[in-house]
Image (cartoon, rainbow, N blue to C red; front, side, top):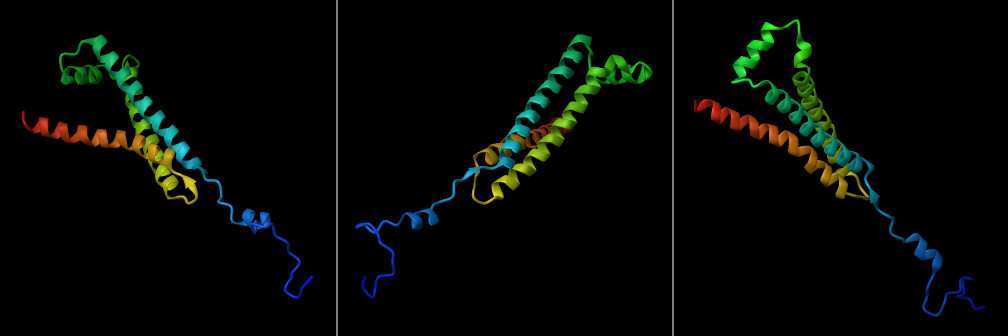
Length: 150
């Protein structure tokens, strides 16, 4: 041994296995919040579609000429609301889908902000969860525009 030898012996190409373990890049996994956001987005959209189908099938089976006739029949039969249960259930499903969408949107935003995580499911969750509120706001403005023209 010479005076400059510190006891470490390297291979000819100076490969140090211990040093490569220290500098290894951490494995990036999918954000669990992003996955939850994606799943909630799917549930929200599917729930909304089912709610619209339930309400539409009820209205198509009863042949209401306009919304005022439908409203008057509900008010006249306040005691027998079981007949209108599909419409009530559909309305509750729309509200629940909106709440699930908002929760999923928040989870997606938090998932995108997390460090050292993949963000694919978070971004997909944000897109899926934003479709419902943006669509409802768009329908609201279309209703205002068409309602004002009559």
